[in-house]
Length: 130
Image (cartoon, rainbow, N blue to C red):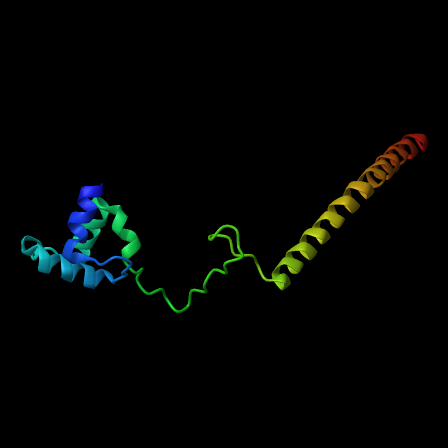
């Protein structure tokens, strides 16, 4: 990679320089006229696939204004914690669901035994009167 890096750097990029994709394509086309028939995006994509070292010299395209930046203190860049209000609402919902389940688990056996006893008593009373 060493010889390729210095060869492409010679006249195309300067040390510690960052440029846009369009500027990179324009410099490549100026230095290598045989690539003039390629589109800028295609030329930059092919060059960066062949020489991934140059990704650090290319500025990323502007991000959408609706995206919020990821703070530096987050350990993994794809993890963005939920706001406290959402977390509290989810906890409250989970807590209510757990309480309902425990209540059903606690009340269901006595109700089932009472219903079974009531049914047996009803049948017993029905046979006793005849």
